[in-house]
Image (cartoon, rainbow, N blue to C red; front, side, top):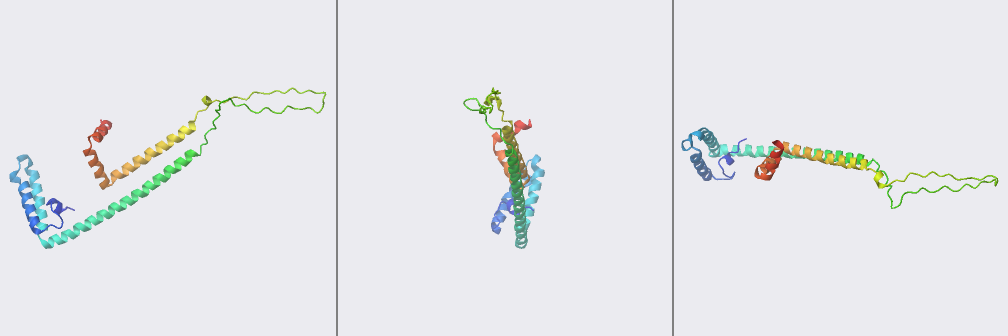
Length: 209
């Protein structure tokens, strides 16, 4: 729905005198006879829209009906935006819950114990066997157990857990940005932010070259 108040650049509570003055100024600015040949077609379209807006706002009855419709349209769009935001919040909560589930799943992998100590690990020696019959002798044999050092330990599972958490975070950020891009209000904010920041434009252009 066209906003005739914005077209005439006046406030919604502007008086009839203000509307008349604004129309005269804009009509003179956009009149096709005052434009170059290359802009005449564009000026004619703008002049047509100005006349349409002035025809409605200059008539008290038409203006009152139009203002009610305009406010109703704004309320409807606001309610629609609030519903979309609520739905977006629910989707974000679901994504956060899914990410928490992934983190909990990654935490179920048990990290191997750290065998590193200042001195090599030495298992306890078994007690010496004492034979009951003196005529027999027993010679103990003992097999050395392997010694574990820090260089023998590779925390693959720990790294896998960190990588999964990183991928989950990237996934949530991408989904959040995509959802924000679909909302008209936040879409306009992101486009405006892009247009007003040369650094962001340079970074984005590097990816699309």
